[in-house]
Image 1 (spheres, rainbow, N blue to C red):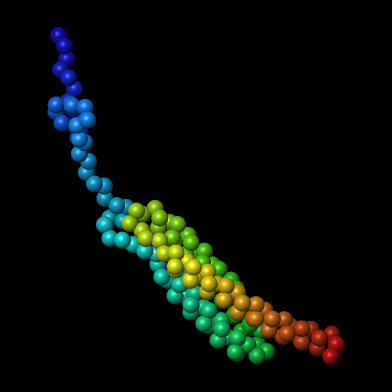
Image 2 (spheres, one colour; image 1 turned 135 degrees about the vertical axis):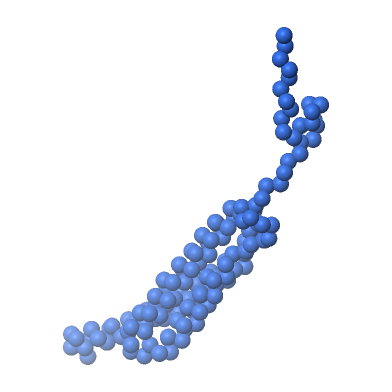
Length: 142
């Protein structure tokens, strides 16, 4: 007594012919739809706003060290963090096959960061004058 042959594997026709086409069903994407996604523009918008605020604060620093410190933090520290946010979000987006990266956005963010670092250096320079004057007054070095 012999056993009957096993049923064919899914996608293989009952004839079991070699080279027979295998029918596969399309997998749904990880986002659940077929629409294309792109990186968030939020880091770019925030970076432009911080750069403008930092540049405007240059005009109003005039002896106020708090404004100089705020300008430095906005331009010297926050802008590189926004570039990092964009890099991480684009890298994580690449896990989705419907994601379209935006190298232009990353380049623009890096340019804004470079300009922001120049503005931050000007804030540091103005803070150095404020602190040098305060120290010279304190030590009587007028």
